[in-house]
Length: 559
Image (cartoon, rainbow, N blue to C red; front, top):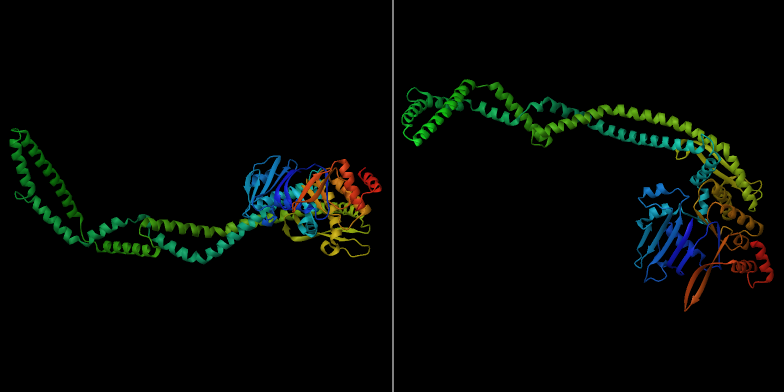
């Protein structure tokens, strides 16, 4: 419920702090006094667009701050969805700066208008002529019937709420599977375009045996085989130079080693020289052995040289085709192509799996949808009777109201039913859709009847009726007042009214006044005490100077 509202610098209101009561609050005042200003301010809390022209004094900002008790509205999950602090007492605030910039806050957390609207519409339901048009919308009609059946079956083990929850869970599975199937089918189309080419590239890379190729080793071997004669000539010359008997470098070094050995005992430095010569000799002997091994091993191999050149040429072609520079890059591309081909080959299996999920889910949805349809059909007549009983009290004694339920082949958010409210206010007239069968005043009374039924079926937000009594009077107005009073036993109801029969039914009464001072006009809202309220009802009855008879009539209405 709305507990408190503060309005600063908005339209004709300079400053207002207003505490609101639970139950039924009546708001009255002369035409043009500014009753609609309160609705305009609350509209900002509902996330409506801000208008700079609504600022009274453009040198300072406009503020609308509302405090709500939301303990009965089950909004914690919604607050968590938007990462908002949740508290049973919550605050919604809008600010319009002189620059025209607007800011919105929920519990001091900045939010955008979409979030403000999502939360605000769960807190306040302003019932105006425009809002009455929602009655003709299919979504509103099915939600009304759903709420009624949920309440009627709440104590049954397999209730409407149970089947609706199961249906919506299955619908999520169905939609997810459909989305996945569509994605797989699109991927399949792409794969089918690329599969042959990817297979060709993959086979080419696999045949290259890339894991066995070492480009550096191949290039070294290629250089060696391409220059066998020159290499053999150098190695043979080295062998002859170092190993020829008596004249070879090895024999000469051995001779010198022997000479240094003979003088090594004379001085440490000669011993060091002897060791160094020995080291050179050892290294040269090792080199000679390796050269001899190479001479024995190296030989021309034209076939191997041709094979190496073909492998190197293959690598160059693959590098150029795939725009890379190393074997490792080709291996990575090969593995990626293998994954694509494998995925393409396994795509049919995935598609069949999703088709099975969809078929199974579709079957479950049809079964659950039939359960929902059966429960709606079983309880719709009761709702029809209750609506007719109320609208007959509201001056439409010949009214007829029916709920048509037709099965459809598609799966909607609430089942497989198309719900259509049909109505006529006149005897013998054809039942038609609401937007074709009822005038604005008739729709307003029909909406009041439905809202009064809903008020016991679900936790409704604060309802504000904006002159729902337009076009009615007398006994019908009294019936309207009684319906609103009954609704207010379970929720906060406010009514802006011009009729004394309705104004007298509230347990709280606010009056909107407009005053002028120094060429400036102000609107204010005041709470009436019992005496002032009596005078206001009498004024509404008399329409002019208040007579004692008007006061007596007012007293009778209030009692």
